[in-house]
Length: 376
Image (cartoon, rainbow, N blue to C red):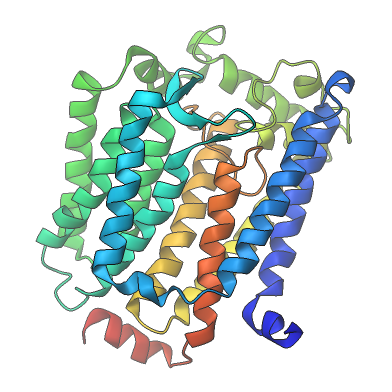
């Protein structure tokens, strides 16, 4: 049994993830008021434990049944229905009706939908790798992303909608699209943005985008969160203020330091060196994910691994960007580090599925794999 666990689990991957989790927990513990006894820290310990159990269980399940179209379509439709249900019984938090409140815990179903989208796009593109240069597949795959994109945007949850878009765009790019079609995709994206700007975006969402162009235009209004985050990051300087001495988070100038702005809270205490360390750890996690994507048995496994890497990179890029004042504030968690159970469960579930694919992974020459992928 021990030998099976050792063969199935990539302990090096966990070796890179555990420090990220640790830094997140330490950061939460440092700014937690003594009155609540570190409630974020205690709850996050529970979520990390449950997520690791899910990771190990999923690692031993044979997920090749997900290659069946009817299975994946059924899962996709079910999760789309769950997103629709939010408009009826969803819990409103921070102006967004995107949570199910079960009393003792809340769950955000869009996190699971992101993983489902990776799966169904991996399935779609894996069966059409020979004819992928036909532009119709961009629009058909785009429909799979458009349904959850619209449902999430209407909650409204602009950040998660952007993640859904980036997952689709990233998987389109790695599927072998031509440069001409790439230009068409970006042109279409610009047109969609213009339409959303004039007909969909709420005033506060427009204000966030405008604030991205000029973050200091309204530091007492839409730019307040980004401004306080940049102060926290900058005040950490090279080596940081030290554990427990992050004034921005402890004095509550920094909003949501346990979730959306945990990177800023961490950077204030650990400084530039600590920030580089955490980004290096994320880079190593992405490297391990892509390593197993490259060893996929078939195109489905390869594309799924790439999709998981895109999933992580999108979250890291947007979260760190908004903490540095370079991107609009969208409420996207930082993988493995931000407080919350929904995203942790999905992150470890995705990695568990990736680990389960190790059992039937193949070792082949890179050129041979690329030829099969591109239909050469």
